[in-house]
Image (cartoon, rainbow, N blue to C red; front, top):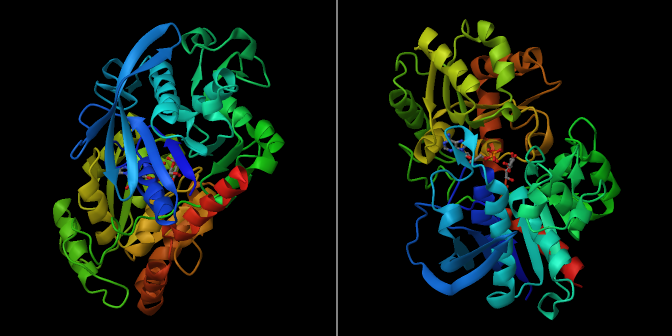
Length: 473
Ligand code: ADP
Ligand code: GLC
């Protein structure tokens, strides 16, 4: 049995800002189900639910650059996986996972360097892995520290490293002086190692140092090797393309299933769709939208409000959308300019547009169930989970054909547009509305086709198992 130690900054139910948490809450159990022995290292942030936790390691020393800290490690077992939470109050017992009030914590480089040190401490004292599997820039220093400081340590002999890039747009870039704070030698400041445009880049370092690199959909694995989507790292990724592949994320259908979902007003399935109408009325009530003419199509959005997610397209065509016979229900938080865009639309046309600014898991489920269509015009999307949730809820996705959106949606389950433009998006929306109004039979067939698609973790977890086996030999 291979032993896999994952390192990440989020995992449901302990901490979540986006899809990474969903993946860390569901991929490890799926791997355990395929015979892997899996543990996940993550920070114990303020307010993390700790039911059933027990302390498994006391006073683990973390030497973060010039600083000396200690951490206690708490273990929570969930679905056959050990979640190991790093309790180091100076770094993690504060408000906000990455920051608060719209700004990042000023010491994120140290905080996540501490996470990487803790992972190596755990690998040495608690869970000796065959593979260290690190996710995103917050975990990216783990393979770097491993090669730099422990290459001759017999405890780590033969340990392989995998880096999964969930989003190349976030690289962990800091000024050069942070090298010292990270405990890394000056000589690593080279263009083929950590240096990037005069500063340091932790994700880049990890791409150089990891044995294998994955990303979260096959199309995104190609896209990040192009100058358009490579965020300056496409050349390096092309150079490592023999050790890079895309493995599509899966869905946790225990959480996202209209037949069992505890958050929604009525249950339904591909065989019996009637409950979806009740969910739609419930959604309209929840957002104080008019209940007259309930057949008016509802377009849902649940999203981090970031430039990545394509809200500039909605801003560009808002002048047109306000005249359409639609309702739009939006849940999200992030960049104030996009929050304000939806507030302005809701103020101007309260019978058409409704927005809730914030993070609300219950509402996210209600939108998936109650909307007719789900809009994801992302500029780029490494994988995207909501479009796959939408499929299961019979809510037709309308997506920009990019990354995982392109890989998971086709013309029998939803609507895709390219190029990335307001006109192209309007075209897809018009097409969806036409089918919705004119050809009910086609619409329902499309809903059912989407609901039957299987994006469970089975195949994707098997792909990771195959990768681990090929690395460990
Ligand atoms: P990303 O990770 O880029 O944000 P994904 O589609 O992979 O995009 O995953 C987003 C996850 O976060 C989904 O589970 C989605 O339901 C959830 N989510 C995003 N914004 C909110 C919000 N405001 N309230 C509740 N859930 C949200
Ligand atoms: C990132 C990506 C998203 C992906 C998620 C989980 O946040 O933006 O596309 O689904 O990670 O891998």
